[in-house]
Amino acid sequence: MNKELIVICNGASLRNFDFKSIDRDKYSILITGKAFRYFRKNRIDYDYYCCIDDAVSKSCEWEICREIKQKNIKCLLTVTAGWSVETVKIFRKNNHKVGFLEDLKKKEGNAFSQLEDKYTTGSSAILFGMFLEYKKINILGLDNDYVNTGNVRTRPDGKREIFKDLVGNPNYFFDNYERTGDVKNAPNNIENIHTDSIIKAIDIADVNNIELINYNNKKSFSDNIKTLPLNKFDK
Image 1 (cartoon, one colour):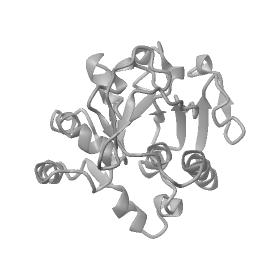
Image 2 (image 1 turned 90 degrees about the vertical axis):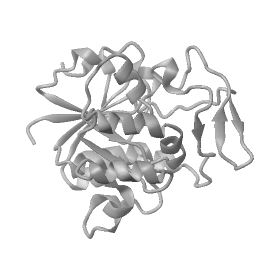
Image 3 (image 1 turned 135 degrees about the vertical axis):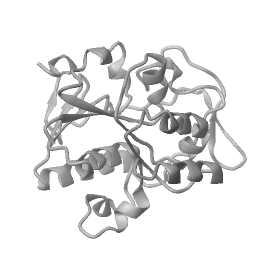
C-alpha cells in the first residue's frame, strides 16, 4: 500500500481543520462515529468508516445505509448487533464493503483477536487500518479528554439520549456531531477501557512494524506514541 492512512477520531482539536486540503493522492481517509455528517455536509470524500458502538449504529442507521448505497464508503467495519433486517439485506448486497468485528476477532493471527474485550471504535479503527494493509497511519483528533456536557439523559432501557443540541461542543470538532434524539450506550463499566484499548492497539501496531503518528496539540497519548503538533501534519 503506497498511500498513507489518516484516521479521524473526532476530537475538538480538529475544529477548523482544513480537511479539503488533504492530498488525496497521498492519503486515504478513515472516519469514525458520526463524522460522516460533517464530510457529507461539506462534500468531502472519504474512503473507510468504522463504528463498533451498536447504539450509535442503530441511532444513525438510515444515514449509514445511505452512505453505503451511495458508494461513499469503500469498506466499513462494524458489529453485528443493532442493525435491522432491512439493513442486513443492504449489507449483503454490498458484502465486499462490510466487515464485522466479531468475524475478524475469530480469525487466527488477526490483530483484532488480541484486543480481547477491551476494544473501542478508536482502537478498532487503528487495527482496521492495519487490516487494510496500510504501513503508516496518521491519527488526528485523538484528544482523550471527554467531558460531561449535561445534554444527555438516561432512558428506561439504560441507554443515553441527547436531549439538547450544543453550540461549541467541547468533545467534538463540529457541533452537529450529536443531535437531539441521538442515542448512545451508557458508559462502559470496564475501568479505563478507552485509554487501555488505544494503548493496546498502539502496542499491536508496534509489534507489526506499523508506523503510527499522532497529530495533536493536547497531551493525548503522547506518553505512548509519537505525537506532533497538528500544524506539523503533512509538513
